[in-house]
Each structure stands twice: as C-alpha cells, then as structure tokens.
Image (cartoon, rainbow, N blue to C red; front, side, top):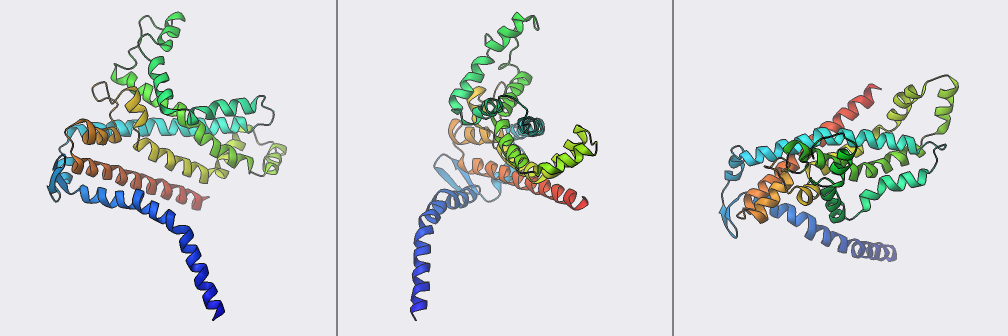
Length: 296
C-alpha cells in the first residue's frame, strides 16, 4: 500500500514537472499547426472568410506568383545547400589540423556571423552590395570591372547576393557539427592509414567522409529546412525583388498575410506546400543515406 502511494506520488510529481512544457508546446506549436490546417480550407479576404473546401488547393496550380516563388526557392536550394555543406566540411577539416596556427581565431571568425544580429548582418550586406558600396568600389579600384555591378537591381546578381549572404551566415553553424564529429574520430585510424602510405585525399574520401555520414545527413536536412523556409535575408536585403527574382515561398506567405489584401486561408495552404516539400526531401535524403550505409 505504501509502495502504491509512493508510485502515485512520483507520477504526480513527474506530471507536475512536465506539464508547463506540455502546455507551452500545445499553445505555441500544436494549436498553430491545427489552426493552420483548418485555415487552409477557408476562403475570403481579411477576417471575412468561410469554408471553401479544396478551392485553395485548386488555386495553387493557377498561381503564377507561387510558381515563381517555388522556382526561386528551388534555385536557392540546389545551389546554396551543396556549397554550404562542402565549405563547412572543408573548414572543419582545416580547423581540425593541430598544426594550424590561430585556430581559435579562425573558428570564431567563421562562427561569428551565426550569432550576429540578423538586422545588422542584412544591413551590412545591403550596404556592401549597393551600387556605390564597398564591393563595387573595390572591384573598380582593382580594374576588375569598368562600371558598377547592379547587385540589387539585376535579377541574376540579386540571387548571387542572397546565396552569398546565406552561405556566409550559416556555413560556420554547420562547421561546428563537423568539427565536433572530427574531434571524436579515433586518431589511430589516420595514423595507421598514414603509415600504410595512404595519401591525404584518399584518407579524406575513405575515412573522414564515411565517419561523418550521420552528421552530413543531419546538416543536409537542417540546411534543406532552413533554405526552404528562407525569409529573413530576402526580406531585409531585396524584399523579394527585383521583379520577384528573389521571392521565396516564405516571403510569398508573408506578402499574402500582411502586404497584399490579407488572404489567411490561401497563405496557410501555401505554408503546407513548404511542409510537404520539406517532408519529401528529408525522407529522400534519409533513404539515400540509409541505402549507402547498407551498401558499405
């Protein structure tokens, strides 16, 4: 009987401990998800909406602006994610070398953009890549270009600026994961390979990369989610311009909700497009990684 009371008391204490977290999780995560799903079936403008069934889903196929935003998001994904993953891995390998001088300084410099204020970071990039910014001035001084490059007013160069800003900001974040994983690899494996005469490139491809496969999968999925939800850099640097050349899905959802005539139901539907794409790509990446692990 005493044991039963003790078990019941432990259960009550346990629930009392986790209940605040569960309440917050329900209010700020589960409830918004359910509300967004319900709103995706509503049609109307502003607060005047009613149940519309599959009308919003049918609207997706005929929305040229959505296709433009989806295309831009895919461009950022297929270009930026591989660049960021490769750079993060190379930086981590370099910083893992004990003979490298000023490792702490380089590590801090690479990670600093991740913890910098986003407003300050975006404002700096916008200033650097303006028509009379430091980038054009430096290129003109070095006689690399004859006229200033329209970084923010040309669709191609605007995309280059956004990709550069994202890569600069988040490469150091991924690098930390690789660096932590590399420092946990048994150094004797590299010593044996070095004694056997295995060249540095072969050690990298046949030892380092296989050891880092779980981390590579994790950072790839993380970068995929971040890129498909890209908003802050675009909103603060180009605001989706010029001519919607840098408009992303998240930026389009923001415009539908706050800038255009509010269409909460349709913006919720577009948000579920992002959820679906993230789920599919994450599943594909996971399956590819699992198949390769089985093959090895």
